[in-house]
Image (spheres, rainbow, N blue to C red):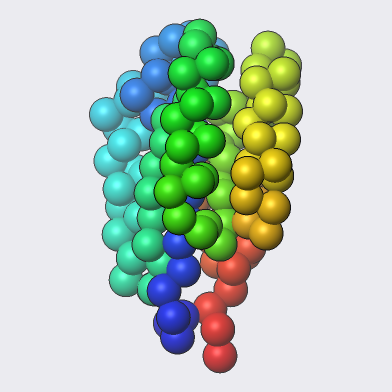
Length: 133
C-alpha cells in the first residue's frame, strides 16, 4: 500500500460514450463502463490512491478541455490516466493531442498512464505509480 495518498485524474468517454458508435459497440453503455470504472477506483482507493474523473465529450472539445484544465488546476495530480476511447480512434486523434498538450502545460509534473478499458484503470495506475516501499 502507498505510504502517502496520491492523486489520480482519470479521463475517458464515460457518460459520452454513446456519442461514438464504435466505442459504444466495443465498451458497451455508459452505465456498464461506470460500474467497471467504479470497481477499479474502489481498488485504487483501498491501495492508497485518491481518484477523480473527468469525462471527455468528443462532440464538444472546448467544454471538455475547459473541464480538464479546471480539474488539473484544482490540485496536484500525481498521474493522469487517459482511456482508450479517446486515444484509440483515428477521429479522436486531434482531441487526444489537445488533452495531452493541455495536461503538460497545466500540470507538467503529472505522469501519464493509458488504460485500455474501464476495468484496466487500477492496473494502469499501479504500472505508472507503483506502491511506495
